[in-house]
Length: 373
Image 1 (cartoon, one colour):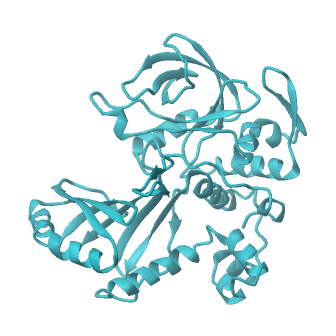
Image 2: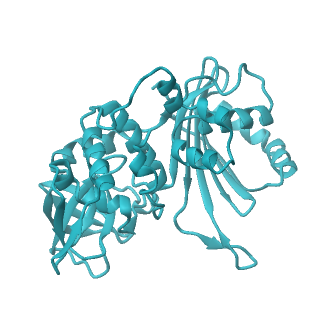
C-alpha cells in the first residue's frame, strides 16, 4: 500500500514502549485535544517530575506526561514540536541537529503508578524527521531550517509523501488502531493449538501490514506470488482500484503500517472462530537484556482479550524471554479464575512440551473489556 518511492526510503527505527493502550478512552481524548497543534512549534512548561523520572509538561494549556532529556528541571521552558498524534502523541524535544523524540500521554489518575505506564524516548530517524517537518511538507515546501545551528534539511519526495500521508490520516475522526481480520482464524471451535497458531500466522501475514517487505521477498525469489495475491493491496489491484495514499482511509492504513514498524508493536482484531471475537497485541520490549551466556535477549509482551460463552471475559498477558514465559490472567469472575488456577499444571505441561518454561503464573478476577465493548 505504500507508494513505490517509500518502499526503499523507510528505514528500521528504534522500538518504543507505549504510554497507554491504543484503545484507552483517556488516551483518545488526549490525542483529540492535541491534534490541532500537529506540526506546530510549541513551548512546554515543566510543571512536575514524577517518581519514574517522567515529567508533567503544559503544552498549549494541555497537561502532558512525557520523558525529557537529562538535566530537565521543574519550571523550565522546553521547545517542542508535535510531530505525530497517532498511534500516540509524539514530540520532538529541543532544537538539536540530532532530534530526540518523546512519546506523550495524559497525566495519570491520582495515585496511579507511573512505572506501570512507561513512556519512551528515541533518537531521530528517517520517519521521525519526515514527521518533524510535517507542517512544511503538507504545504509543499521543499526545505526547512532545523536546529540551533541553522542547518538546512531538505525534504525528499518520499519525505513529502509521508508528511502528506500523516496529515491525511488525521482527517479521520476515529483512528485505526489495529489491523482488522477479514475471516476467522479457524473454521470452527475446538481446533487444536497447532491449527490456531497456523491460522493466526496466516491472518497476520495476509493483513497487509507487511506487504512491502513481502514484495521485496518476492523480488528476491523468497516468496511466491500466490502469497502476495492474498493480501489486501493485491486484491484491490485485481479489482482495478488505484489507491491514493492521501485518501484518509488509505492514509490511516499506511499510518498503521509505519507505526507497526516504528513502535515494534502489532495490534490485530477479528474472529478466532465464527462468533468468537478476539483482540491481540504483540510488542517487542526496547530494553534488551542478556541471557546466562551473555548473549542479547529480546523480551516480547503479548495481550490477548476474549469473551467466551462459558468462561466469560478473559484477558491474558504474556511476557516471553529466552524460552521462558510469564502469564497473567484477568478473569471476569472468581469462578473462572479458580478454574484457571486448577488447570495451571496442564498449561505448564503443554508449554514444556513445546520447549517453553512457565516461569510465572498469576490469575485474578477483575472485569476486562473485549472488542464488543
